[in-house]
Length: 289
Image (cartoon, rainbow, N blue to C red; front, side):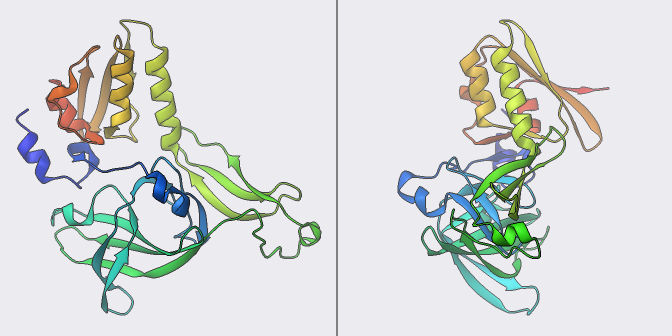
């Protein structure tokens, strides 16, 4: 495991070469305050699930129930302020990001538990130490009784509205889908959330492992991923008699490695995400000509 020292230094970097450790399961005591769908400014609308995953208009990433504070500079005004937060969304803790890497996150401050929060989208450029933001946005939790501006649609104006989240565009392995907060009676839509293509990729991969015959090798070569979440290794360990072959491209070079059936994972450093370059070294992968 000669890469361990190097990898510890780049936690928070691109997933391809890093181990990213974070608690992604929301505790029962805090779950009711944040789990659900939140709407507000278009970029801040987000869906937080009970397993620690957050989907916003851009993608799906883990969120962590961990409070703290971060000094940020407002891009519009140039003023600095210290933002206090109760949870954050992103792949790396702010204090763990090396200066050489770009990083971004969304910070959330609970204003009224289960009803309203303030969100800050913060980012740090590569080779810079300061974090920047365009300013906060207030978001509110969607309820069944929520009413919306129905515009000029007469049927929508007359409807008493009962809104539910409905999948209006199914995601694929390459394209995100769309979930809409839609009235079940008249079809009026008040909010939309993307459904990450990662959901399809994840489900297909886990199903392939689960359904593979004993002694088979499952091949994964989806270019959207450059790391495996811990649950992939857990699925291989539970199955026990299936190997996983991974083909990927990084910086113009093609690589391949195989996680053999029945592998001993005790030599891997404990993490929630394993970069493919790390696994390439751990399982004696090769460069493909």
